[in-house]
Image (cartoon, rainbow, N blue to C red; front, side, top):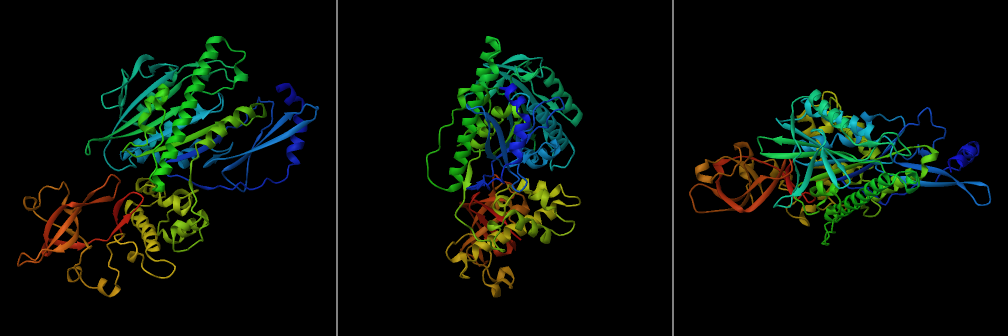
Length: 571
């Protein structure tokens, strides 16, 4: 096959030049907030004899075309084209720093604040997976240790190697370990060492040490192919909250097609079958988990699909990532690494098909007319324009906050990710990031409250906001207009209230009704407690207290977010 391609390189280039402009690829929805699929095209090396067969589109940043040369039975070479689409596309000249900023940077603060972030690098052997993951690990180390993230944390690292049905500790000279489930169904790496790291250099040395023990072997496509899955687990301990966040960075073994294994020894062919089997199970688990997330976000009452996480050691280690009923927040990033060479078209197509199957899109709700006052309807271009006009000084850069996102996607971004992106802009403070996020959310709430007819949405959707809707009343002091549904901040001695676990400035309650049983005016109230997401609150209607008007210090405007089912303080 390669001799046929070499013989017809000139013919191939001429056929590509004669191609008409490709038709636009129409997407049927948007990527969900918990799964992003990217593709990275590695540069052609100087010693490669074949031209590039992968052509990213200039007018559509996430779409690429692959042109293959087919040996027609009649003897005339024929060009066959395929089109693929991902969420983020990185061309040959893209740097690892660009990949980090657009794909991985959001996972770090997410794990820092108790979430589970997971990165997978998938692709043919020799496509640049290990190069990409190694560079990203160094950048993650820099972010964790440069002091840009709030709070004190303890960082621990474990790096293991999964080869077939065996597992080894790469930080302990490939000592065999066991993958077991405890009494609670959680997967444990029995025998794997966990090292605490205190600075960037210490972290880099552990990564280099693990790579030196990684299992590699010569294959048809690569003289030093990774023949195992390297799993780097970073555990981020929050001593104050007595909780852990997890960040997994996984360099998967290089996949190979059956045609490329015909020259291998029986043991190498058996090894390849085990690798491809585990990759197939991984693909099924990621795809089914993404489908489960799409079902959950749709609000429809459907049975959650079964995730076959016990069918390989790789997915057993990551079982909690794929569990659709797990209570912890998870985000996943997949980087499909491809070799652009014409000789590797078959493997590149397989890799991109793998990536496309993981793109479970949130269905579009029909054609939405752009409304300048409704962020949910904004395109990326309109969103960037609004950010430029409204972010204040110093400016929050739109290409950092929303490089590709629409208004809907930015609203689905977690508060942690939103603030982290804002703080990457020079001079921007946490207070400015919070104020800007509140401004965007206020526009979103206001757009939901006011329909096309000008009626207040609160009439048809009660409880979405605690804000006073009558502008005449809103100008009065809050104690002169106390009403059911108003949210107040209050103070009260613990011996009267009972220990709620809240600090003084965090005590919030919604007024239910006046008690009328005391000379001092009092209200029966339900309290708010901090929710699982940062800055979010849960309303505990069954946890009630009696609060005197004298104990109320301020009115607080609370907005209800149906997606997270939490209340948020608005400005």
